[in-house]
Image (tube, rainbow, N blue to C red; front, top):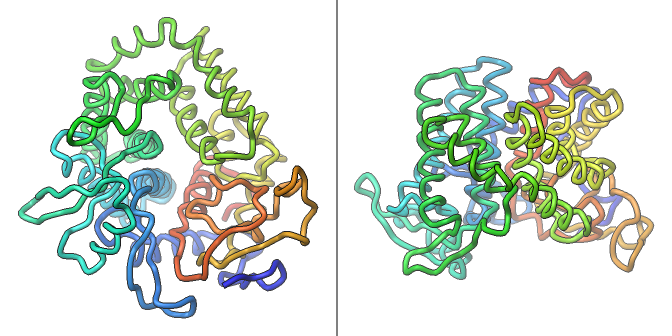
Length: 405
């Protein structure tokens, strides 16, 4: 179902300011519809106007978005102390543990689904190219999805690190540190390669010194005795290499836009725990290259990471509040959008300027979708989880951004 620009339905009414009630409603809906097995999935409805769930999709990115959701609820708990937020943190943490447990080797699975679920067959069909494996956990059989990417690891490590830092609960901190340790032990054992059952390597971190050092930075923060020395030796000369892959990514600001989300969350971890000196200067240089590329993309998520690393900025922070209010005007489902003929076009098939948030094409996480993309989406059968709202919202609350109520 395709909606032209003027016909995109407004399913959530925005308020004068971003309100806590909006964020709580998104979280409640996410718990009700988007976490059937402990990690984040998106429901498929019977029709664009139905609330009957007939399947689940986007299992392949479940680890990535479960990590982002864990971060969002950790910020929420730090701001509010709400027991419901703590319960959501625990739920997301348990989900990530499932993804590490189920493989039997401490490999991180993309997602895991009980084989007796009515949705299991549809998910397996959709994910068959990633590899579907079977294992038991707690006397229940699961299918788990392989071909794990660096994206999934980056999202999981980001969320675990935020939870460790912000949630002052001994059990949460212990479990987050334990999962980080298991993940890093696995990656170090295989020299930063990610082997699947049978030995095929799905991806490697060998070409990304920035991501290796970000993970080791997290590791030494939560488990100094295990990872401080490893970080020290890896950073001895590796710190000089960090700007290079970021520069390559920044050279093309339009294609594979998701790369900027990965760069942003990894540099967030790498920089904020580096005290100073040449190492931090190199990391900051890499971040500055990245930020100069995306700072005019009207991206609330990137803005909040920048707030965390660089402190207050009136213009950027006011923009963030406005972008979140505009997000509330977006449809939650994946109604098709085509802006050809509606906005100025450059270089053949992209918008010349960032498209207003409320008019952008659907995405599972809006801030990893290019703001210059002119068309995309489906028939309104799939609902987004809303993590792209609650993560920057609760970060904005934590950092005291004005206009966020």
